[in-house]
Length: 584
Image (tube, rainbow, N blue to C red; front, side, top):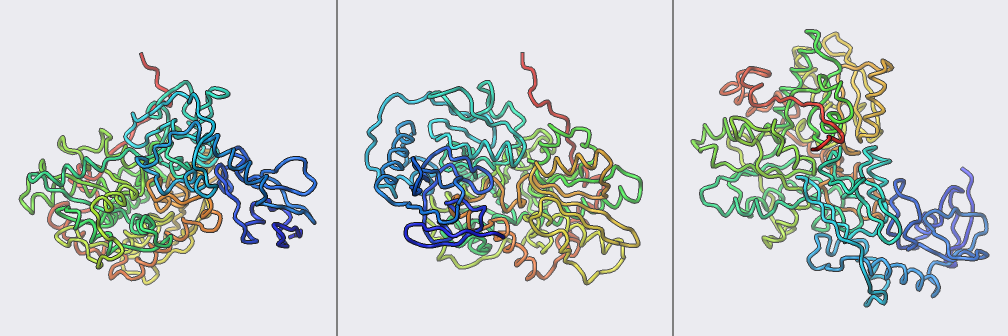
């Protein structure tokens, strides 16, 4: 690769010719502030906070887009540069809701951090502010224009990465805002509530709908039996809320904190992930052996389900009929567990701790009810759990590790753990399906071909004399690309795993915020996924069907995978949705 040598703040640095000044400065250990910049997603030079002086240039240059050149001389910290950055941020703040102490992003806000670094103590440009719009009609996401800085990061994420495109710049000039067209609520659009826009936002213009008080109320009610379950990806990210390195596995401390908060039972959604594999794996076998609709496509991700309902309704029959793991856990707790423990199901309140904002909307779906009762009563994101732990004044880092409650639903396998990473559902399913078809326990249980963060992965495995073609895709833009090839006949598969977020649940929209500066160095998808594979490797059981509590559940209650009772409790259906329904 051709390289060039330039000088930045008297430091000579040699970098690839296609680098920008921002990347070159980073390589030289020089920090340039940014706001609108998001690596490979939003490199548009809108905010002008990253300006620098380039020798020979008539004006300051935006370092995030300005290419390097041989012999270039750059200064990043002159008075002219500092004054320009400060004035720019002051102008942004002049039209910003500055109630930082009550903001959910307080101390974790990129605008706040830049303002502090620039030493801004007063705003000389006070005046009229744009009209405030607070959109909180969905179950998942709240949009607050009073905090929006028009950086465009959410727009690029939604339009170019996810290919959903419900967010855009609307109006002109001073009245410009970011939101859906025609002043619509996000609840009235084909939004899939993946929450990737929340992760992209440097401030709190987009955030999850907070359900913490609902959960506190349930815990405080002496007549309510509150059960909490945690998704696998939560343990790989919760530590970041408490300043641990990205990808630190905190399973034991997470459990300990939940018990101190006061939940009556602390279970792992991984148990239900094992249950999902039993149902989904046998559903796949049935389709393959009896001429069912193929390819079968996973149904664990509610963002992907909404994307399919809006954009690929002709493939709804290809979806597995299985509910997602946390919904399965909810209905099993309110049936099997309630019966065994002689608890009135009406008094059970199920809380799911999820890495996903779309799970909030999923739990409210009409399809997620059994016998008139919701499977899951409240969903908290990883971020919300972090706030709840802090509200309880629990010293998270000092906690001794504890274990999940073990009565009836407490055991889980490594197959359940890896659900949180892209390819994990596929690998977990193959581990069980392989043994069923081969009629013996195979020693090979790690399917490396389905791991990794390539947008689309393919594999062909021979199981029981059958060639099984599978595909794994994450991110709805990539999902659309793959599905179009399937529909055209260009590709043929037996089984497809689709996750709505890039990297899978480890990078879900409910996970802790990571600054754009950190994302220049670290791929959080890789680091968090590594934590899950590490836990998988240390488990006593690594195949879902080996879980002794799963076996007991079928023996005592469900009879067998895909039984009539299993379908009644654990399976569902989905329907076509109109992108922009006509309202009267």
